[in-house]
Each structure stands twice: as C-alpha cells, then as structure tokens.
Image (cartoon, rainbow over all chains, first blue to last red; front, side, top):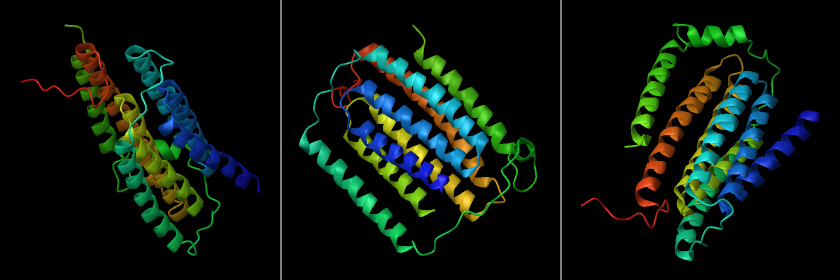
Length: 167
Length: 99
C-alpha cells in the first residue's frame, strides 16, 4: 500500500517535470526540472530494490551531469533570459511526432495490460553479487564491457580536452 | 508493471518533443538525456518483473549511464567551442559552413 502511494507520487513528479522541462522557455528552469526528473528516477530504482543503481544515478546523473549542464548554461547565456518563442511551423511536426509515437506505444501497452506481472519478492542484489557480476568472466558477467567502457571514458576525456583547450 | 512502462513512455516522448522543437543546443542535449533515462527505466523494470534473479537489466542501465555521461561531456565541450568561435548556440542561426 505504501509502495503504491510512493510510486504514484514519483510517477506524477516524473511526468509533470519532464513535460515542464521540455516546454519551459527559460533554460535554467528547464535544467532544474530535469534535475528533479533524474532524482525521481533514482527514487523509482530504489522502490524496485536496486540500491546501487539508485546511488549511481544520483551521483553520476544528478550530481555530475547536471552540474556540467548548469556550468555550460551559465557560460553561454545570460541566466534568466527568456528564449525567443518558437514558431508554429517548428512545434507542429515535433508535437505530431511525439503524439504518434505516444499513441503507438500506448496502444501496445494497452493491448497487453491483462498480462499483468506481479512483483515477486526477491533478494535484493548485495554488493558481493554486484561485484562478482561486474568482475567475472563467465556467461552473465561483465568484465569485458567494464574494460571497454574504461577505454571509452579515456577516449572521451582526451577528446574533450583536445576540443575545449585554449589555442 | 505497465504503470512503470507508461511513465517511461511519457518521459521518452517528452524527450522526443523537446529534441525536435528546441532551438538552444543545450536544451536539445537535455531532451536527449530524458530519452536515455526513459530507456534505462524500461530496462530496470523488465529486469525486476520478468527476470528477478538476474542482474542483466541493471548492468545495462549502469553502462548506459556511464556512456551517456561521457557523451554529454564531449557534446558540451563541442558546444562551448562553437560558442567561443561563433558567439551563438542557436540551431537555426549557426548555418554558415566553412567554405
């Protein structure tokens, strides 16, 4: 019962703030609404029992990426400016594409709603489980993607420094 | 489970709308973040409800968060470079090619 209430609160927060974030005309407000969406998403992960993923979501997304965004917004524009209103010819295809996509996905979900899955109580993954899965080389374990993503992060750091340095 | 999927669907298509209709490059990137987060919620929900004994979905979401962080940092570096050279980050005004 409590889980249902928490889920509805988080779901309403996510839906409201994500729609506000894409339709607001001030950039800094858009960034703040996105921050609330990311924190509510971490709350959803926590509700489902994945504490490590919720912690990673807050520390990386809400704590790292949003700080980057706010820095770059303050570097490239006067905070508090209203953006120019976008013309009808631009909004209409965007709204049409979003509405068509929402209709297709909504139809698929509605069509399958009687195959409802229930929440089986499960063992929350402990840190030992996560560590063993991340660092193992057996069938469902993720050492190779871990090494690959570390190479990707190195490449991204080098690339960002090369692009953004002062000439 | 469907309630979670509806939430992530609305978030994804809000991101699509924002991506197609915004003028500032940074807000386009922020809509991209919304789309990525919606897909991550989908992965975790399917993992929790259909395969509760395994961790595949959460690891996919974990790696997707890491890759999205790297890509966002790089995209912001490019945007700041564009701002330094052209003093402008609006999509419809940055239209002069090099030659």
